[in-house]
Image (cartoon, rainbow, N blue to C red; front, side, top):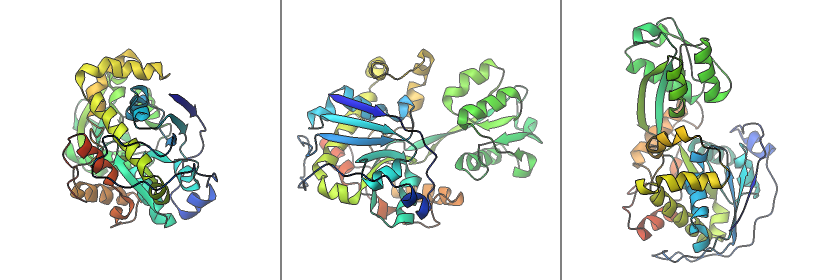
Length: 352
């Protein structure tokens, strides 16, 4: 199977209408035909031989299912012979402009861009249906009381990571005024560096940072796995109408790969397949196998409509989507539900 990865790294896309249209990438779509929806898609064949896929995250775990679908031959089995990946934080302009067919991105970006642009942007499946809420602390911080008067960062002060840290402060029995929330740059690795340097005493970090933090004398003071349908796969409504068979084929192949990934006996093969594709994965990251799977939806679905309502309400607090947004306008789950049925999985969510 042919594959290609291009790596443009540009500024993060803003969700305002001018940001969406001002950076639009103009490109023609591949030719397609309208596919008929069938009650069973076990043997579906894509009407497109090539899928142009976008992703914003270079981490192996962010791309695990689609690259396994490629490596294991599931895409080819369903008629997708070429799978071309473009890595860019500007995946939404690429989707809108037509240079991408399907993209992986933040659920909030799909919904926010749909609202801002008025265009039929559709989420077709969920990738990560939960998220780790973790506060890492510097050496010398052993209890919540030790954080009083200290600096905590989640990156940008208006971002979701800072909001999560505020929830964790409350769970620790502290008042927001007991600590100082400060901004930081450099992503999660930068926040880890700030902890190790002592410029902050608490920070939003991820499971992969545990080893380095503990070796330096710090620790995870609190960690919780929260229900949060935070990442998704999406496409434009017009592309989906013209290429239903491709959408069904992509989703079925992707969910086959997820089901394979979730079998513990395939763990070593799953890591080796990604290394063979060129991803650098330290051996120590294999200890995070279950931690990564705990975030990934095994079936492309999410907990419930109520869970999505709560998530949208949370991200509206930081301005990523409007308050009381009608997220259902930006979801078309028939592809996921059909793939779930074909694989003998329960319908999840049962309805939206």
